[in-house]
Length: 218
Length: 254
Image (cartoon, rainbow over all chains, first blue to last red; front, side, top):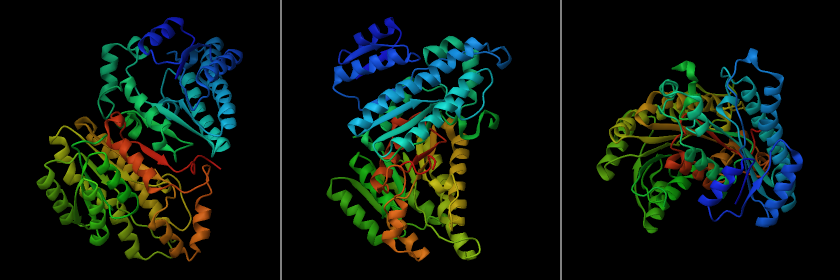
C-alpha cells in the first residue's frame, strides 16, 4: 500500500504508524503532472496497483451567495478535477493489467441538497456520475464504485462543528451518532475485496440512516 | 470467523440466495434458523451445514401467515436464546402485465415479498431491542429501483421493500436495530429460470440476455450472500436505511 497526500507532516505521521507501507507519495491531486509522477512511483514501489481509493477532498462552509470564483475553482479542482486525474491515471494502468478496483469518495451531499456547501455538493454529485460512467466503460476489467459517507467524526468535522452542532445533527440521524472513520474504511475494504466482485457502477451509502428519509423526515 | 455466536433467521433459505447465505453465515460461525415452505430442500441445507460442523434448524414456514412468523421466532429464541440477524429473503415473481395478472397472483406476490417482512420484523425487533441491537436485511431487487417489462406486481412489491427498509431504519435506529436491503440484479437461481418459463422463452436465450450488463455475466447466489454478510457484521455498523445494489453494473446506465 502507498499513501498519497500533499501534506508532508501527515505523510511522515502515517509512515511511522504503518511501517508496512510501501511508501508515501507527495502530490497535489489537482496537478496532473504531479499525479502521474506519483502514480508511476507507486507502480515502481509495488510492481502494480490493484485498488485505488480516490478519496482526497476539501469543503468550505459558506453561503451560496458569497462563494467567490477562487473558492469555487479550488473546490472543483480538488474534488472533481483531482478525482478525474487520479482515476484516469489509475484506470489506464489497470486496463492494461486486465483488472482493478477504483473506489471514489462521494458523500450523502452528492445525493441530496444541503445548505452552505453548494460547491462541495455539486462536486460530490459529479463524482457519483463520473463513477457510474467509468464503470460502464471500464467493465468487465475494472470495477468502479462511489462511497457516500454521511456525517463522520473526522478532525475536519470536529473543527467545523461545535458540540451543540454535533448533538443537533446526531438527533437527526437514525443511529443517533456520527460514523467513526474506521466504519467508512470497512465499506472500502468490502468493496475492494473479491466479496464484492459483482458490484460495480453504483454509489454505496454509509450514513447511519441519514438519507433513508432525509433530515426533513425527522 | 465473522459471525461467531450470532443467531440468524433466514427466510426462503431452502434454495438460491437464501441457501447460499445460510451456508456462508454458518461457515462464519452463526447459528441458523432456516425458514421455508419446502421441508425437503430445507432439510438438505440443514444437513449440509451440520456436516460441516455448523448449527442449524429448519422450520416449515409460510411467511405470509402471522402464526407461522410467531412460531419460527419462538423456536429460534427457545433453541438459541437470541436473534441477531433477520434475513427477509423469501420472494416470488410473476412475469405479467397488469392485464394478464390474476388478482390471486397480485395478492400472493405482495404478501410474500412485502407483508412477510412486516409480519416477521414485528416479531423479531422486540428481541433485538432487548439485546441492544440487531440487523435486518431485506431482499429487494434492481426492479425495486427501476421498472421492468411484464413484471408489474414484482416491481411494485420490490419498490415497497426499498421504502419499507428505509422507514424501518428511521423508526428503529435509536435502538441500534439496523435495517438495509440488497438489490440483486439477475442472479443464477431457480427463480430466474422460472421467469423464462413464465414468459414462454427459451431458458438459454433468456439467461444469455440477462447476462448483458457491464460485467457481462449473471450474479451468483454466493455473491449476494457476501453482500448480506457485509450487512450482517459490524463492518457495516454505521450503515442503515440503504439499498445495496449488487448487479454487475446493470443499473449504472446504458
